[in-house]
Image (cartoon, rainbow, N blue to C red; front, side, top):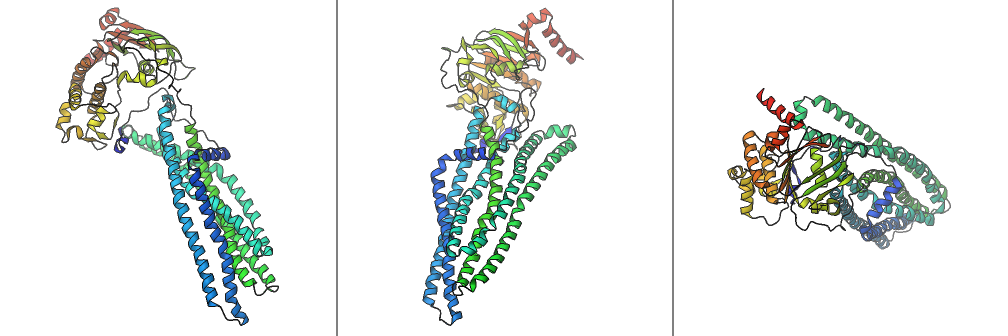
Length: 611
């Protein structure tokens, strides 16, 4: 599918029974999530090692610089004792110092460039894994979760992982090397002053642990409420017509304000608590500078020649030593965001998938279109069955109409045929072969399906009709459009089949339905499923489509779900469902003559018309 096709022009509403927004499971296993994340980064280990080496090289340049600065300071300070300054030596030392800083900047740039490639590659791998995961998930996963929350995992959470790692991972190694290297350099230079610098570490460490304990739960809640808010916004945007129709703007705004308020409260708290790290560490750093000055002044009496340079170098060492401690708080906060977002992504990737069917090879020798239901039992929830011991046999070429009140199980029956859901017990056979023994793709290739809810993507009319069918000729396209009674509309458009459908296209719901019917016709599958396919068109168009459907279903087994019983009077067999069971079956004349439930349904519709 092309990039522009990825944008959905219209999307069917949620299907299923009792669907609602499931609460997001909140896991706070920081260590476990980071272990998973590191394992997920395995393809990038080599580049990550190179990045770490570059970061260590840049840090080494930073650590060596104060020692060179000490020599430069001492060389200049000799003038205090009446000795002339050796400008050649000063220039040589200055050039060495400049080379170190240039090396630091160059290595930092290269490692930042490589780290950006690693994190973006990781984001791509995450999104690819999520996309593949979605194709392997059963439909009941989406029946219990909001689309917005799933989208938030694909977008916000993946972006959070990428950006946080980009800023924190390389910095973590760099600051660790800087901390250790600076510590060694300080003890080599002057161990007494090094002890003073080290004395400030426990204070910062205790405060950092306190921040982590307080802020981690807040970051987890922040990601949860962000997903909930995205779900609410997605549902509100897609249901604007209904919201305005029922004057529900204030109620929806209230729901939005409630969720947004929770998000604001948690984001404010998390940022406030984590933000305390910097000012406190700055205060501790300033105390360290004061201590260095005091100790340096005491030691100056012992070594007046070298101490000025040592004191200057220790000012730089203190800055380098305190930087990792100050950065530690930010890195920890970023890693907390990473963990909170990664938990939600891994939670999605760990959802139980459909059974692997690569080993299944069964397929009917010839697809004639015989479908047999053998004592089928099914429930969306195992403890609440809606299909009870359903049995029926559909002969090849028969037109089967499934009728009954709302919730009787009509759509559920075709969902089971297509293996959108797995039956609890019993069996469904196509031409004598159990659908359990066939791959899902094999079963679905045997059917074309037209739903009540239209689904079109942003693309040309040609692309929407052809969809995944290969090798479709213009003649076949014209025949399908003519059979679906959409050819007149297409020819009236300036660009014909190459007209792009998007949100601004002036296409009615009926015309969208006709395009989906043409799509089913172009697939030319052995069997057809029509789920209220004519419900979105006017009476005249319905008659034209009905004629086209009769031509389309001729010689093919077809299942027609209909509420308007006038559209299925010519069906070979009508299955009347109620409470998940077939209570009557026969053709229209037989059921009317019987005077049962079907007869009362049929007459009630025409009584209303008469009234």
